[in-house]
Length: 188
Image (cartoon, rainbow, N blue to C red; front, side, top):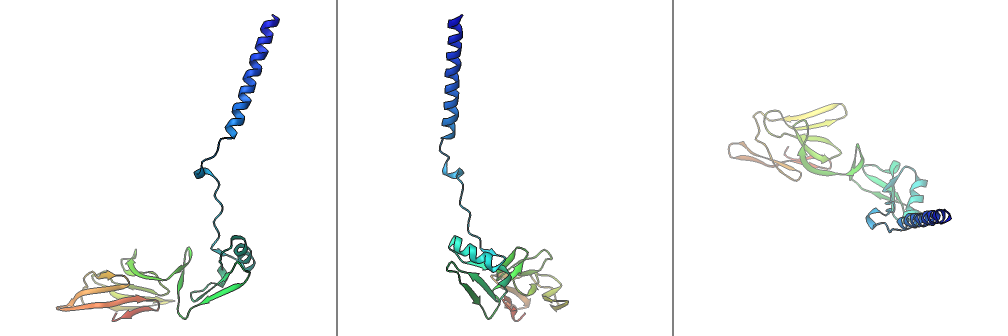
């Protein structure tokens, strides 16, 4: 009986040691690089000057101060502990739902059927063809529309320009409606 008890204890001890070694070695398995923790990316902006200054020094990058940003200027905190202002004599960004975005006058279709710049400080839109407004400019509580007395063909869009072919027999409105940072240029 003594030999059976001893062999069971020895067996249990060996199983216990093997189990402990298995658990320890499982914890020492290297983690693939794809699963390793990634360092946080530096923030692009901050809500206060103090926060922007701290983050700029911590990440060694320029951090925009959100309340100091306008369509014409932006202020950033630098890693050296100074503030730097970038100022333009015309708008260079526009506020959208997601925050400030660079002006993009490239024309694209809108849900209302008009064609408009992707990001513009002016609410300007052009006809996608057919009856209706050739151009529409909306500001505050007013709307200005330029209408064509006849139906228009769908325009050819090239960047920020809408060209309406055969507006009249033999007449193209070449480069007629062009979106720019101030709204509209060209003959539109």
